[in-house]
Length: 322
Length: 199
Image (cartoon, rainbow over all chains, first blue to last red; front, side):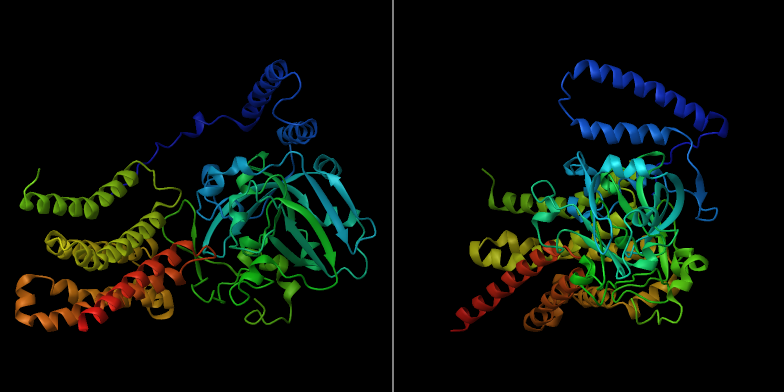
């Protein structure tokens, strides 16, 4: 049976990006004014929340440097990228994270950087943002479940953030921890994973220029279901490494145990580099379903970023080191 | 009130509805684009779940008859069993067409190499002789004892189906656990019932 297909839009009917942004700025000013008029004390959001959301939104409306790092591959439709998600804190079905997105409380938000750094600290999210210059990066995203997307992220290199806190000579790994809030996050009320979600990178992986801390996508503030307000994006690794809604970054000497490694070390390795030649014990990793396309694509070594990252693993047996 | 024959007819219509309406619902949602971001995946999952549910329901018909003694249940048992089989055949075809896009090299590869696919295929193969001998004439030709013995394979097929479901699950094992618990309960009832009646 044929799927209903929306009629294609002629190029001439597409609103130019600049005009679209102008209109949006105009509308936003209008909404902000009327909202301010209606909410004397800020009934819905705290002051700090308004601070980071509004100022980030404003920065995203301006021109950002853009780097296209997914060849000429078509962007995944935004609606697909925001309604087909693995974010077990909000439920295990692909549609759950969008449905329960409002349960993720992101206002206020703070980020702690500690462990093997000379300058540890806990910062309000708006202070993290104000230090960094943002850019847009188009990356492939390959899930360990053999599906993939192409997403325009907005963020800054993790290396920029780490350098500000001066890692010590003993810092060999970087551990990330996600929000723990079982009262609101339904997934955390069952023990499907060892909460809070934890991930980790080797320090050279963390400092690699491709490794991004993302705060937005598709030109907008990060939607909750995609890991608001700040998430990791490591494009050459399976998606589960790209931890969402990060609250703590800890530099360590010992290799940390991430949540999926704890759940099943044979199936989910520490490195979890995209590798079409190393199958998951239960399914093949040779191909992937690109969301929005019919048929399957061949999976690329390191998700197509071998030229940039293969040297990180020189001399390592990629069949052994998952 | 309904006559005994009327009640049996109503029950058979209910079984018909249980077997067929979900397919219409699935087709309706597909048509209107309501099957989510990857409708292919939704159809593969939905047909498999429906097949397993109906297979467990088929197995539940015998204990239900034991408990109620109502003959209508035994009359509709073949009907629901064949619906279960039809859904599982649809599940395999959906997997071949919507997951593998009829790429026979990969269909063969996954059937040989992936344990969870092997268990699923084995379950379906075991059900083929049951579907073929589900008719009265086959039952008479085989003799009741042999027929009965053969049709106990439904337990093996259901167990393989639960294992298949278990193996393809990631992290959240609530549904496969539920399926396993239901099957275990049905099996236990069967064994206890047999032990009591042997005495």
